[in-house]
Picture 1 (cartoon, rainbow, N blue to C red):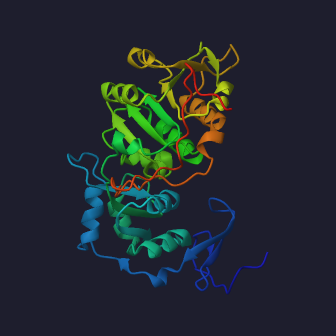
Picture 2: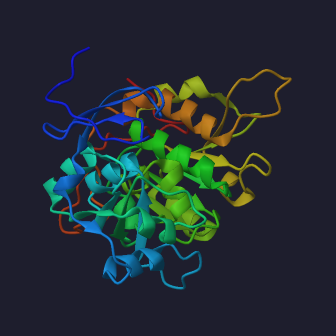
Length: 342
């Protein structure tokens, strides 16, 4: 296969063939995955070579494991960076490593939003990330203000309610699936998270944690919200009175309630749930992972959530004067169960 432009090479052991102009390179089989990848030439960007550069202290501060007040967050790797930029996060600066090509999609996203980009010299990177895995691309962004239930009410997609789910990897996987399958938002109850800008959650969600409304709430706040709004809560349980396939017939916004694999959903939520739903599995299997359950449920609901899909309001600057619904809400059924499609 011919390269998409003029080519040169960078000497050394790094497993890339380099193209400076236009910005394409071939990633060899020795790298993560072979194929053409759009990159940016390192010569085009300034390089941080001195520890006295203010950015160095900024990076040190944001990587500290214990900070009483979290105002900035580190976002690592190309996909989470690009997704966070698309979601409207306010970046202070984005960085690459002097010895590695910086993906072109990162450069393109940064230039479109006016985000400054620099490279970090290898000795500085070694000082900054002595114990952590060294990212090839990373950025520092300001933490957006938390979403509220009022803002969550502006979307008509289904809500995913996680009751007592604490494993960050599971939460991150559910965030990615929820965004991909058009969910309106997520409510995290008793998750032990203090902010959605948790570095572990950003990694696990691949940056999608900023792309849809996510509310951190107490159990009392969450149950109060669903009592006020009347959005039907559908609890997932091994002995549910409905099959998961029944969800595709519901022609109204639903709240899909999932608990932890060990304890399930709490009594306070069960008391206000309209129905319970089960997913058929082999009796020899104890349970399904909660993120798998969420994926199955949201797939059954794609007809509602992906129809005429629009982006939710941005997390960084939601405007209460212009409530942006993703589509006109359909009237709910007056029956006791989820509204049936007519």
